[in-house]
Image (cartoon, helix red, strand yellow):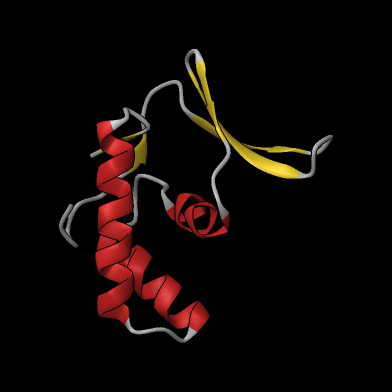
Length: 89
């Protein structure tokens, strides 16, 4: 996924907090995922308006990390989630 791509959660996919278990989950038709801390930070920024580059910029500023490394990691993660039907572009 390149920096200009604008990802969004696929139809029927929701990011929700499971207050009972104290964790966040991704609900999809007939599936449930428990994202790790890094994936959760990325998924919170996937809103259908921000590009992959803008998500990387936000995370680089928030965590004082190299943007190029974050962009590569975010692109790879979102491409994997797209292949699983969680994220659409």
